[in-house]
Image (tube, rainbow, N blue to C red):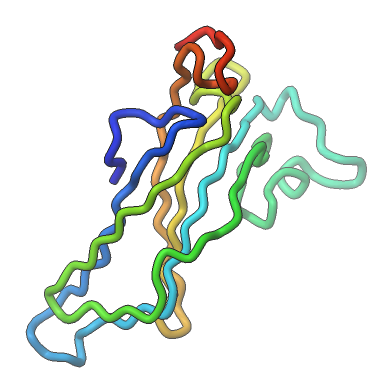
Length: 158
């Protein structure tokens, strides 16, 4: 969950990740997590009618990035994956909570949904348990604030 009211580029914000082990008191129902990683990314989506695929590729394969993105979408910013936790065990019925601090670089555009373009941000957590990967994606509402979005110059807020 997002712990701050809004996400503003250039200002730290915090998210909370909870790992639940559902079950009774039996230790066999504990969840062992070998690693949890976190990354943020920004995507731009243009109306597919406005985007031409690369020569020799279909619209879906040109922009899908290996199945992660829809036609017309591309990453315009992405952080490297950072390790949040390693080798943790949640016992049956227990919840482990992690508070993670992040910061988008100054100058990022705000979240926007228009007729032909959209800018959206998300944080993705990946938990590795045994051989399985559990992916949780959380949207981030990004706003701009005058004087902050571009590192201090007047930016014209939203």
